[in-house]
Length: 328
Ligand code: G3I
Image (cartoon, helix red, strand yellow):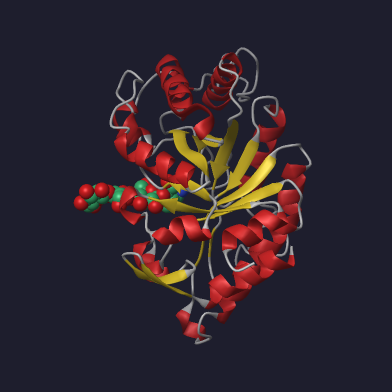
């Protein structure tokens, strides 16, 4: 196959891209069969303080573009401490209202929704505690465990609400939890990735409400970095819980210091794609933008194309991904 989307489809996955309305050039529909709104479905854009929807125009544009190009959509994202806009500080009831409105607004036009994003601490101590919405959590019996049935748990309660809305409206939309630095079984130095373990515990505990797990996959171009050989093993253990796994926001730094004209980056992309291909329930990969110059981390040249404004050139990383997908 000669496009990422065709090669991926043949291998049984989607290959997607994060997009904004200003970036919908023809390459989006040619190369990708999945689309994630990079910013336009975040509460900061679409939520009012009461959980109603507003300003859905950009999101609609993206969903319509996806539909007319036969792309599936990943909605991104509902319950998140960042980019919450007027929803910031809302209680669980208001979050639930927003969850219901967002799910029913697009219905089955959204195949996957990131219901909860980045719920875990960076310092590997488990769930966020000090930032809203995680400050809504109540450890009712004070035993330090937020998973007791008497506790209020924003992750669990948001997924319960989302699942209820899906069922009441007979939707096929799948409900995902998404995070970063959860990709490897181990971290640099070979110690266990406790952030990944914390995510694993959440998914295992709430498996009945959670359909899919996103590993954001913002990687470094360094053979000893988080693109470790245990990416596949970590994908596998989540898949073994019965959930789909997606690599949802892939970009890989190109470390120019090694003068390898993007070859190390291309090899790393190959490894990441291979890890997903090797696990049947790893059903999709999304790159976080089309070209380096339009990326949130543009100075690190982490994507598959150079150029901009609809005029893009393929990099070595593009060729590596296409080739690996074509191997199936
Ligand atoms: O649209 C305004 C523009 O009008 C204004 O002139 C400009 C001035 O700063 O800002 C523009 O908004 C920016 C927006 O991106 C669109 O470019 C925001 O400031 C900026 O904060 C926002 O950054 C986004 C970031 O999330 C915010 O947290 C990035 O584009 C987006 O790629 C990034 O995506 C996140 C995922 O949602 C979650 N995982 C991590 C990932 C990378 O940070």
